[in-house]
Length: 245
Image (cartoon, rainbow, N blue to C red; front, side):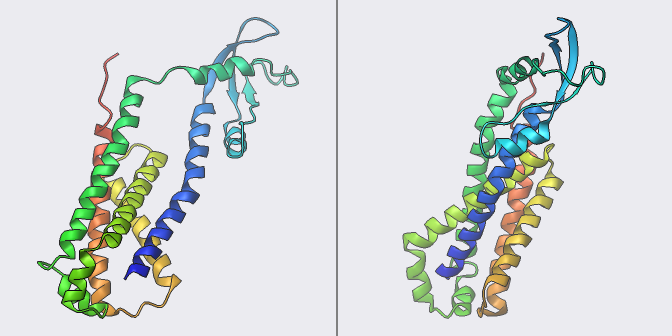
């Protein structure tokens, strides 16, 4: 059983490690996209420019983003200019974040921690003697006493806490990537991530625990995924209060 937990933890961590560069690239893309008004160094008059956000995102993954213009209101007549207006266009990225964004950065991680704790407690109850500990123990070849002794050690709990935190963080990150979180979107994202992890686990090894084990663990993990998706999808938007202008 500990090997299964380690495998789940490894796969969740691998997903997060691969996902973080994508999140960073999306963050850079969001910063550089859009049209900005600058003072043209040649005419000293206003000009509307748009930076190459895709190039900035890709190059920013390995260092400082390489910035160039994708379009300008003075093009195509002056398409060969030296793009000396780029520093002014970049300065628009340095404006301080709004209060809503500061609140979002503070509250979303707290919400993720709360969700992780709730689904971990659900797992403790699910695998307790009051619910499925006995059939779970029989499915993995343990006696009730051995399962009880295992539940009193720290290692399984630490591993499951880490797995819950990684899963909740991955769901929150995906919702941040997609944007405009809703309850239904949170459920979709969470279940999709659950199916990917479950498929990888089933394909990674030959599990001989039987159908009872798959029913118990499948029931818990699906319920946990639904809970995480519902809360993170429904509460992520409300975590940022509306602020009047």
